[in-house]
Image 1 (cartoon, rainbow, N blue to C red):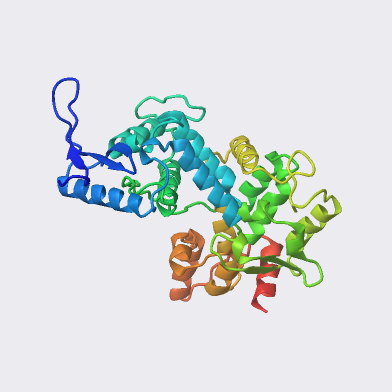
Image 2 (cartoon, rainbow, N blue to C red):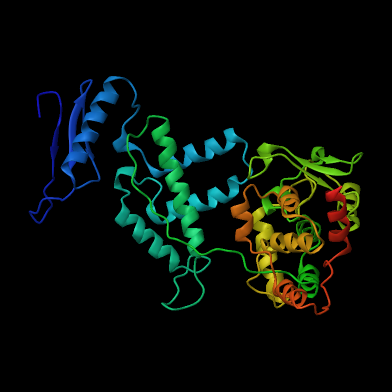
Length: 381
C-alpha cells in the first residue's frame, strides 16, 4: 500500500507460524495503531484499514479502539438504559456480571472473538446456580436462553460503541436457537398451593399477575400515579411497556384485583404499588424470583415460571369469551405472532371443540376466578 495508507500484516507466533488473522498497522495524527481485524480475509481487512484511517482523519472515531474494554461496553449499555428510562436494568446487570466474571472486565474488546464466545457459552451451560460446574448429562444447568440474554447484552454494548464512534467494527455474535414457547398453565389448586408458600409481601403481586396477565417487570414497576381510582383503571404509558404501547386495564368489575389494589393502598409506603420485604422500597425482581422458586418447590410445583401466570390469564380471558384483540390490548401483546406463541388453547378447550363438532354436550370449564369473568366483562364494554 502507498505511504501513509498503513499496512496489513500477520504476526508471527512463538512457534514460528504466522497467524491466520490479519492485523492493521497505521498512523493517524502522529499516533501509531496496531489492531486486529478479526478476519482472515485480506480484502475485508483492507476495507477496515481504509475505514479506520478515513474515519480518524475526519474525526469520526474517538479514543483508542485497541484499549476499549468490556467494562466500558457495560457502562455504555447501562447508561443507555438510564437514558431510555427502562426498568429492567437489574436484569442486564446480571448479564454483565457473568460476562465480566468469565471473560474479564478489563479484557480488550479486540480480544473477544467468536471462538472465545463459544467457550464462554459452553462454560455457562455447564454451570449450576452459584457458579458450580455440573457433570455432563446432569439436568440442572444454566438455561440456553439465559446465555443468549447475556450474549445479547454484549452485542448491544458493541452496537452502542459503534453508534458513538468508539469502535468501527464488532464481532458477529450468533445466538443459539431456543425453543422457548411457553407451555405451562396454572390451575386453581396449584396456584393456591404456591400462594400459601409465598411470603406476605409477594402474595399481592403474584395475585395481580394471575388476574392481569402482565409481565413481571410491569407489575413491580407499577406506581400509584398510574392507578386511577375515579375511573377504576390502571394506565401505563408507552415508555413503561415492553411493546411501547400505552395500556389501559379496567379493574372496577374485577373484585379480586380491586381487593389487591385497595389493600395495597391502605398499607402504602412509598411510590410503588407493591412493596418489598423492606418497607418504602419496591419489589426487587431477584428477591421475588428467589422466593417464587422456593415457594413452587415447597408446593410441589418446582420448575413452574411466574410467566406461566401470563399464559393462564390469557387462557381465562379467552374461555370467558373475550376476543383475542382485546386480550392482546389488556395483557400487552403487540403482535399476533407473539400472542400465538403462547398457545393459550388447553386440552380442555380441545375436548370441548371436538364435543361441539359432534353435538355432544360437555362440561365447559368456567373461568378460574370470578375476577377473570368480571374483568373480561368490563374490558369488553
